[in-house]
Image (tube, rainbow, N blue to C red; front, side):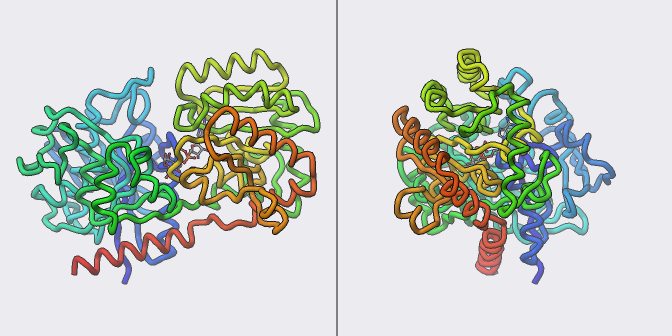
Length: 485
Ligand code: ADP
Ligand code: GLC
């Protein structure tokens, strides 16, 4: 039986992207098509999305969606169906999806994403003529209220379908003051610890985790980690209470976007048997970042510059990295203080450290295609995609042993090296010393060309396509639909 699933995400590549959620929401529909599941994606109508839409058709209209007029536009995300919630009062703003141009979160994010979730619940139940769904898949706190509306509100469509919520990052919970509750359009009984109430406020992610029929997160290791206080960030009790409903399904990568043999962004395309061509890409990065040309390793970073990503620790290790012959090309943006610290390191080490503050999709591909090793010292990492891109591109990942990084990179210890299975370097803790040691290990291994080539080849051979993860989601959907009967 062909299933129809509504995927509800606040970003989806290539329409709008601030991080890995967009990559996943953008790739999942094609991955699931191969499993006999038709995924329709619902995203908010930010200006960037509306500008990229092309031909659309208005298929539904709300006079007052939580008090705001809105319409639903139908379009395409690649070859798959797309719905866009066009609610100008909520989404037609300059800036990013969640914050204004200066980086300050919009004050009314709770209302923006409550309306988004409410629309999703209406649509899934059949509000749009000819378009009913079998299941809703909600992503992160922005879609956290979808299961709450499904279970507790009376819906325009009338049908209540099963729901799945995926936690892409437990650090972002969408937590708002209790005063917002009366404006959510939920019945009074929803103000309960078994529903949307969370530590005296409204918890959007919490509500989804409480009321969805299944909870998934994006790697098996992270699914275990969030049972602890350190990683659960206040919601570990809920994870434990619902542990028979929690699944860790690893993200895959979209081979149409991320294949070194076909990547249009690269100066030279290459495969595992034609690695020498990477040299041209490396020279291009050196030129672009004003770095010296030499035989030592070129480290890269493509990251949000935040505490999660351990970027504050990396700043402190740069003198060591340069001292032992490494160079760094960094692309990222985030905390102003960390950005400043990287600028200062670049000024201290001309020709050795190059920094681009900003967001640049094409440059991120070029860095993976020419860098020797990508540094990912995350304090926590639900899945992580940049290490997967690194593996696919022969850019050896140097990672913290946490979350999806632990699940996807095989450390080059003696046993793994002699068995010929290593794909990268792991560090045990995100401290100055552990990161400095990991960087030293990378520099030493890089000086052994045959061993390094083996790491690159092993990574490029590893299969992180969506195949088995797509099948895992499809199996979960079918199980939930069957349960509901
Ligand atoms: P997270 O979602 O936590 O930021 P992921 O590794 O899952 O981490 O995904 C990050 C995504 O965003 C990847 O596709 C990565 O290439 C991309 N990315 C991060 N920072 C930048 C940047 N400054 N420019 C371009 N792409 C970036
Ligand atoms: C989040 C996580 C990241 C994950 C991504 C996609 O942004 O921080 O680890 O890869 O979501 O699931």
